[in-house]
Image (tube, rainbow, N blue to C red; front, side, top):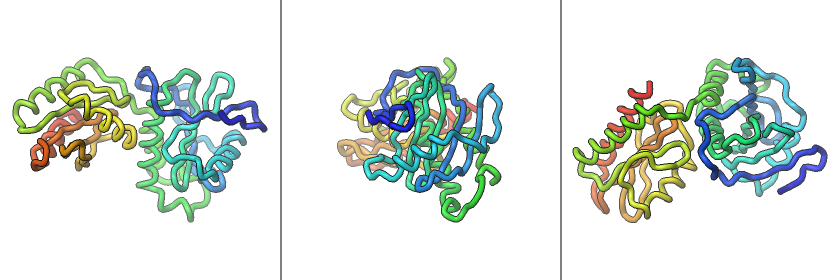
Length: 270
């Protein structure tokens, strides 16, 4: 714990683990700031379930961003929390900007971290090249506010019919494809359905923690190697799908199978 002396706050680093709570955390405000000088890039308020631009922010946000953003020990993609009465400010640092979220005490920081990580990656991919030369509120750029709102409001809860669909899809894939195993994980990294060996689960959960969530569906699977198996992975909203080829064999069947599950789940969830 590091005391932030100028303010009655304490900074903690979340380890990303936590008990799964409701899929949709209470997000009151979201700010994006330049990491080096704490300059405001974009802000949105979701208080009272109304989405609106937030152009002003508490002074301690800029102070924290510039203070911790300049430290070599500050890790990219980790969640740092700052408690203030019954509220919690959560900071996540990227290479040139920082995502800051205001939530309520007791929220599941592990799931909120995934949301922030995915927002940060999406923002960097679409608008990161503009940050160095941009002056003013990036919320005025078409698409920025919609991107922030999409990840802030993304519901990670799964209906019973989706859970049944997942189980049915995994069963069908295992029957119809020559693959070593298949499985679907939730946003917290818990296996919802599948026959994945215990010795492989931690590696897949680590990958899920790094990749975060996706507000839509990924088009191309990415592969990780686990004990000689090429494990094909795709994200659909809050879900992560993993299908493995047999050891040292072609990944084509696994890649086709993971894409089939992803497309079916995307259609079912939309």
